[in-house]
Length: 328
Image (cartoon, rainbow, N blue to C red; front, side, top):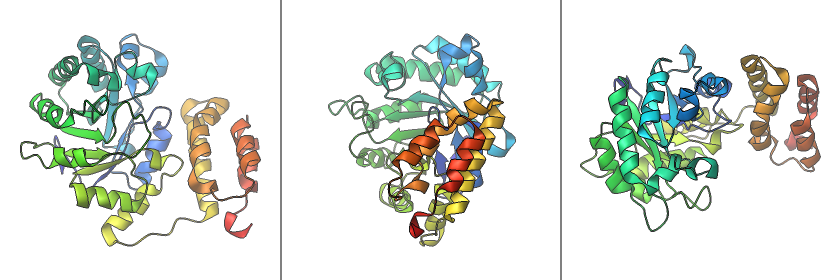
């Protein structure tokens, strides 16, 4: 499978773009465990053209994480194309357009999935960004705005005609947000449309190796994108790859090994942000959602203590004191 000139192995696994999640430290961990491509947090085009430092920081990428896509979002074609030119100077492998974020602060302002209510503007933005840069442009979107407006089959063809190099589809509408089950039937319909020639990447409810296998074998997608299933669980890519390649379930690393991976991530965030407190704050969502601590009885107080820890020393002390749930 190829996106532009980038060649991928069979059945590649991609790390989905997620705000406050796919920072450089986490992307590198996911690459370490076998992610075939990673995406940055989504980047505001408005903030980029206004030279907002915190937003510019999101453009930081390293050789070790390639191939890497930088994802941008916005609500007008001029700002998006100008932002794409700025992004191109950071030398990513791909620029991805976010037409799928459902949260109110994005979609409610006419960006992200909000553009599914204004398809002419969505297509205008796509056309102008493709024209503005010399690297592959891809799109990530949803099935449509709501159950009565599932437009993805026709929209996919139109986006292909506008010159995008690949299309990632999350199997929900904007109205669903992240509730209910992802509907992969329309993703499969897009992939099996004989008029579609670009790679189709499936996204939504890919939590286990079996989910990834089903996406490839049942719906025929060219790649699978893993989002929430990776949070606090970067080794999920290794588990999925082993299952896809061998059909066997790979045992998860030891409890102490998993804790050390989480500590490595926190350390790397502190180094990246050059601030202990900010690094800890930025890591909290992974600590809150990791499966490492699932199944431990009476763990609520310990979890709260981890999320309230203000220093690396105190946080690591709490993590070190957590005992393997198999033996408690």
